[in-house]
Amino acid sequence: MTPMYRDEHDLSRDMRTACVHACNTCAEVCNACADACLGEPEVAELVRCIRTNLDCADMCATAGEVLDRFRGDHPELVRAVLDACAIVAAVCAEECRMHADRYAHCKAAADACDECATACAAMLREPALL
Image (tube, rainbow, N blue to C red; front, side, top):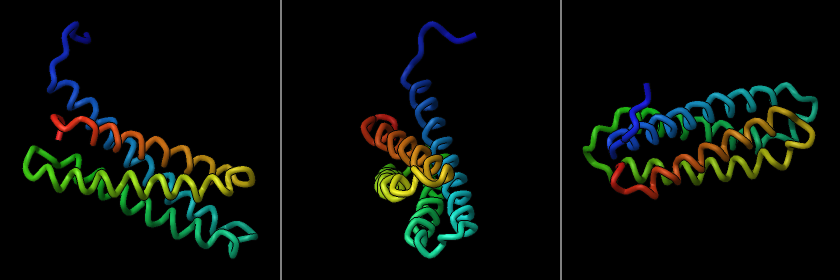
């Protein structure tokens, strides 16, 4: 049963869990997009998208792991990782969106990147949570 009153600790846990989930999902979807791009006949046109997806997948996986381990020590490190992740995810979303009309995997990656960037930005706006 969900409690009627939720304290700051609950909010922190919920937001952190959502952000970790968004980062992990983005990493998986970007890896899948890069792999799918490699199988496309126009692979030469997708080199930049592939590289951006791989960079984003690495950054998101790292951000998810760092945030999941975070227990209050060195919040400045977590902020730096989340800031970098939000930037990389936004760049990747933009790149994937250029191909989204032709490839469903690029559309899925753009959407996952948008969600990840939003989740990281939300965490960064709540300094009490970090």
